[in-house]
View (spheres, rainbow, N blue to C red):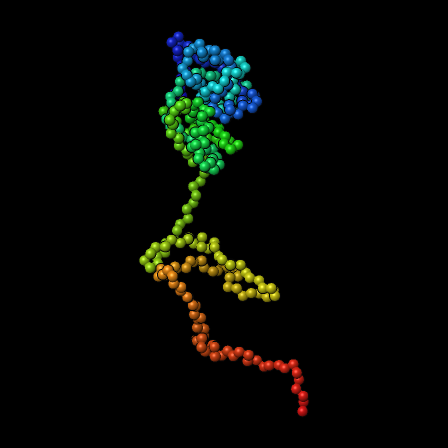
Length: 300
């Protein structure tokens, strides 16, 4: 890491080892759990004051067993002697359990100019203004470290973000800085598939229509009709021949339409078996059946 312990004129540096515990041990301390600052014992404040360190106080936490490191600020000096209390997300980054030993070094970090985050869930996309939410949450943080997965809370829901990149170094201070923020696609996010469009040429103009899959998917009134008397209704689109009908095609608009006019479109009956409409009308005679009378005629 590019961070380093402060060296003072007398050659002394702040380097102590404490037992690490989560903030839940202190009760309801959401202010600590939502940020990137820890609680240290009063003896640490006394030692830091005598060393005349540079403010703001920033520290590097190191797990010697796994060589995992992170950086943080300090919120209060009210912990029991020999103990520190840190947020649970910080314990996960350091791979430590309750009561494990953590080494703390006082460090000096450069002011951040750029940071890139990657949400660990696609639920983060539901936030209307993610940059504003992140800016408000980072007010409780003192510094950022590349590779850390920080946790922020918004609308009673916790979101995790991985620090992918930070400038000008791998660990930066974000106190009173003008930092540019960028987001990477969330873990598990997939770009929506774009379906191809079909271009038709009508009267020299190009018209975009739906693809064949979309047209086949929509079939108005494609079901089989039923009659009240139980007889089979002769429909053109039945259950047996739905798949045999070609794809649905949209009609061609009337480009010669003028506002204020009405166009009547009449369909012409096709010629069947060489007979015209007039010949078919001649063969049809209304009421050509034999009548029946209810009153019987007297026989002579």
